[in-house]
Amino acid sequence: MTALRAKYPGENEYLQAVQEVLESVEEVYNLHPEFEKAKIVERMVEPDRIFSFRVTWIDDSGEVRTNTGYRVQFNSAIGPYKGGLRFHKAVTPSMLKFLGFEQTFKNALTTLPMGGAKGGSDFDPTGKSDAEIMRFCQAFMYELWQCIGPDQDIPAGDVGVGGREIGYMYGMYKKLARQYNTGVLTGKGASWGGSILRPEATGFGALYFTQNLLHKAGKDIRGCRIAVSGFGNVAWGACTKASELGASVVAISGPDGVCEIPGGITGEMIDYMLVMRASNRNRVQDMADKFPGAVKFTPGRKAWSVPVDIALPCAFQNELSEEDARQLKANGCWCCCEVSNMGCRPEAIRFFQDNGILFAPGKAVNAGGVATSGLEMTQNASHISWSGKEVDEKLHFIMDSIHEACVKYGTRPDGSIDYVKGANVAGFMKVASAMLEQGII
Ligand code: 2IT
Image 1 (spheres, rainbow, N blue to C red):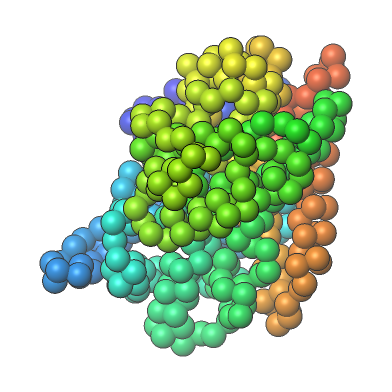
Image 2 (image 1 turned 60 degrees about the horizontal axis):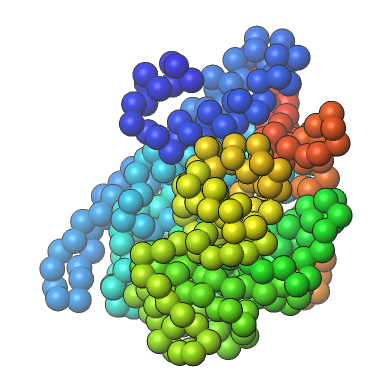
């Protein structure tokens, strides 16, 4: 870590993600001198390669705009590079390196053969028209297409990139590459190669994992009050499945504040989340404006200020601080399943763990998203389409396997489970062994 901090000063998200994994795996790493001899850790923390490119496009007023695009191909030990694209104004190489590093271990947990990657741009979709989104996606793909391929690197969505953006990028990819293999991107529309249930998969998988965790702890999700941050694709899937399982989502939040929903989120409200996301307004207050009476908006507050049993961060990294963790506990919260990538600050995780609050990390909880992308690749490669029931069964099985792996590697001597250690060690052992078996490259 000392060497890495000196080499990449200021790459805080990346250093935070690496530190968490190295702390978790130290004990098991030291039991394997062959890993040390092959310098597995030194090789694993460094991306295989990073593409960086200029993206120039024209906005609706005719003004020329320039952004920076990236693709970080992190690790291909267990399969072709796989991971999402993030369009957000705060995107930096550090952010995409952290995400690509996490993706490598997450993908290892899915049981499917996928390596880790991440990409995106500092393009800010807030306030952009549909035509501007399309022109940006096309300009982005103008550079990216040479870096990707169905057996090489398969991007998908992430923050700011959903089905609409994947559509615009896929259209442009075909035009440039003259390759018509649907497997080059995942998260496609269901009528042109997309998997049924991929939009829901991250949120559904997160709730399947949460159910397993609660079951193991002798608890039941029915009747639980849940706070969710965000109102994007992941939050939408999580709200849908949580409600279906008999829990009550009583808070959702956005960058502008929190919406409290004392009676629990309804199907109509969940549908409206999609409208809010598609509008590019990035305002959760719109929910309160649409459902006055049932929803109360408070500006400047987070979802973690609302009394709940379970907290589900579904928005962005480091969105839950130690102070938030303390407030959640003071209000009676006893479980936090991280759905966003690295959603909780390290001090918040420590607070949860020291205070007996059940906690599981994003790379285990949210892996259902990329796992279903893996299932989309399988369907594309065999030119078939599975039913929703088939995909859901496979997703459920994968989430059960990930939970089992966490239990296997994370059970403490007192029988409780350290899900952070479990997920990190399980992912690490798989990637490290694959690297070792493939020689010094
Ligand atoms: O963080 C993630 O796992 C994703 N954004 C999904 C990646 C994918 O390839 O489906």
